[in-house]
Length: 248
Length: 353
Image (cartoon, rainbow over all chains, first blue to last red; front, side):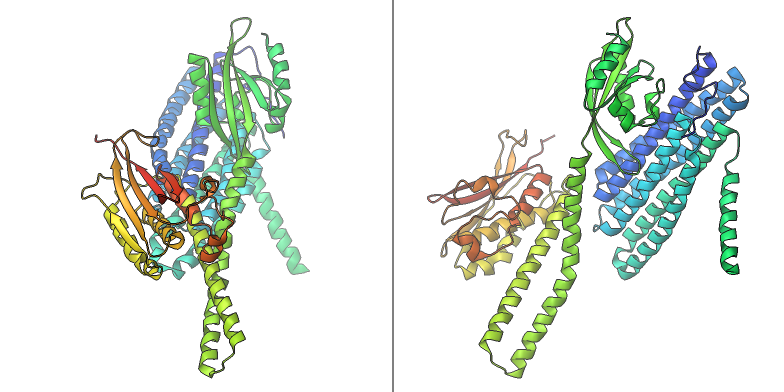
């Protein structure tokens, strides 16, 4: 793990008001992230258990996420006005702002999964696909955890790894898409259920995409560089490998 | 106590533990915690280790109220890990408030339970299709043999055994599936009102032929008006069906089986407002009392002649138990040679409000 040690890192002392305010912003983001992690986990649990009661609680919790996003907006604007940050601190608050809007979207997807689960739970149980969705969600869950950990622990290596994980999620989604399509064409009576499952799978995949956005923001905030460089390189490797294969 | 002293005490704890100041910053942690969170650093806010909203809320509550709290925590990641977390607030020598977090892992127990249910569901499902094919083929062989006019006692006997045993196996698999389905819905409380009269009526009709084979008469005793009870119609029907089927199978021949419904308004173990009771009674040899508490275990068999004679899968009462628990009800069993055997399924009544 590569840890950057910035002036604004928690260890620094004595604490200026700027460091204090930055910390309380971090705490808000951590709180919001924690809620989103829990929302996704509970939504998937409700889905696998066909549990409408659990699903209903998720819609209520989404209000807290929206509230936190507003608080982060206000805190950020106040921070910019009070401290006129430059360099690293500026990157960190701007990234924080972008993160919170990504997290809010992720919360919405979790809520949507819960809504569809309420509809599903009144229909016959389809375990095979819900379990596949659960496996895909497990990876996304892990991506969110590692991204937020990287943000709070100033870990520069993690964002790359998270983006690599998302490629796995995308592949899983493609295969799940085909699987659900096959099942639904075999049993037309359950078309409604399968359609909802398809959207739920898509929602999980979208949550993964938003997580990679956050990972890019984290990387930018910590290093001042854009993470795209690294992705281009990996593409180059893929192309070169193909050429080699053709040549051989 | 000073931070140093507390750190020393933390080291003695078998579970992962850390201590935070009133800002939520980690000021001490033990070796077990460093294994749980390898990225741990002194001075970080504890939300950089775990961001669970309930844990954060508990921390905030303790800062105000002091004392201690316990809660369940899931750490997500590549695999979910389950913990019971104890939080304890305290005050340092110089008056600063601190809070200790103690993580007790319970993942293994959770995982074992999950795997067992999933395994039963999957295996039963996979067994069903080859068995269906097998039974179809058996049927075809049976038809071929009888059409050819070939009379062979041995062949007929073996065909009979094969048909009987594969039917039994199908029944077993259906019961296993039904059991795992009930288990998977066990924590979802039903929401619809029950039609008790319909349940009793349908069960008597469905089992009347079986009863007739043993010259048993099914009687029912249902009051005209009944209070509303919430439940899953199909599941409650299955309970009464399973209990009545057993009553017929194990009951004395040339006798009667009674399905009765009554309402008791006194406060009881399961409800403030009393219960609605569905009972199934038969006459005949009593169930020895040592078997009574174990009857609802899956595959539990009384080791005596009756179990072998009547067959069955050993899952009927296990299914009943899960349905009863989903309805937050209770199952009472009484049995004696003089009074016969009575299975009573009590459902909680709601208040009038």
